[in-house]
Image 1 (cartoon, rainbow over the protein chains, first blue to last red):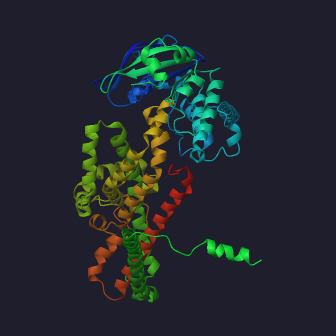
Image 2: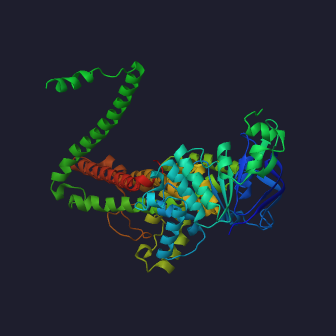
Length: 259
Length: 318
């Protein structure tokens, strides 16, 4: 179920503007990889290129190689829709579908896959996904209520439940806690720890303590200046990055002497 | 023991919160505008009812047509609703498709041009649509209506015989549909553009195709907007005078046969055609039919509001 992601000399463009340059990265299955770095350094752009959400923006494109367990994601004849069904994503701001109930939100992806399942199997899927996202006990009595009525932290966990309901190979998280309070953040971080037994997780975060708490590996992205492309400075085990990084730029950033 | 009772009185001073002069002026003028529209509406209703009463109380023989008031207004109500319904059934799906094309499928430059054209179409006076209907659409649709009669004649709607001039209820309906298409399109387009990027991306990230994304995120979000647009269009179709008056020669019958030469007229068209030659109770009768139209429009709008409110908590506005 969980698969490895491998990028080789990956260049990411917005039109003619090179946003991220020369990313070489290997993300192992069943690990949590955190991507850190200053704003605008391209970590979110790189994350969105993994499930081909990057190209939703007109003119956006990618050069180089990006593979999922050896299979080229940008190969000829690869349908981005299929890629997104394998690689789930959780966004910065919780975005449950406001017109759907909690129940419908969880099975939204299942419906897309056109898997016709019985009522019982669907009920089980909803319960399993919501339990997986640590949300079941809080919402089990109001599954037919709109998802937008939940608190921010609950909405974000609902989005995680929605993403894992389709059993993706990889789960991408784009600053999933930046709109949440500390207690909700803690709930999500605990959840990430549990999820990594089943999924490959890549998380972008601005919060270095969070990266240190949740991740096994950390990649540091930076940018030379505005208008220059962002690039991956180094990637290593999280404790190495935070204690004895190889690059001076990384050390300056993680120790707060950035600039 | 008296202390606890007096304490709250001193704790809550009776001074009002300070309000800025500008705020007071704005609040006052906004309230005034709101009250004014209610007064105008009430004035119209009072006028209609007062002027319609003589028609309600008059004996059937005094009325135009010589039968009861219901027999006179009934076919008109039927014609009004039928023509508006045909228009709505044709125009709404088409308008939603056009709006979706403009907002989600067309290349940006084409979309902009199309948007202007649609807005322009909305501004064309209805008499022009009426002329187009009678001069172009009616003769041009003859072969099509003959085909309908030949192959779908078993449906009462297309029983025929086909009108020789092509001036039928179906042509009116299509003309009205063309007329209200731009309004519904314009409103739907605005709403579709408001769909939060966040929800579109949520659908795409789940592996939705563009059409699935539209069904999951755009259409549910735009639902109330589509209904509002359709109601605006319906309002225009119900009240449309000239286009109907030019195309149809009404004969006061009730029939679902859309392609024959005998058709009911609509309330508005009937008023426009009969008013210049009417005197006395006949005028009151026309005003009574106007009152009925007024009530129909109110009802239609209330039903639309009710539909929108029924799923308010799922609307995405909270």
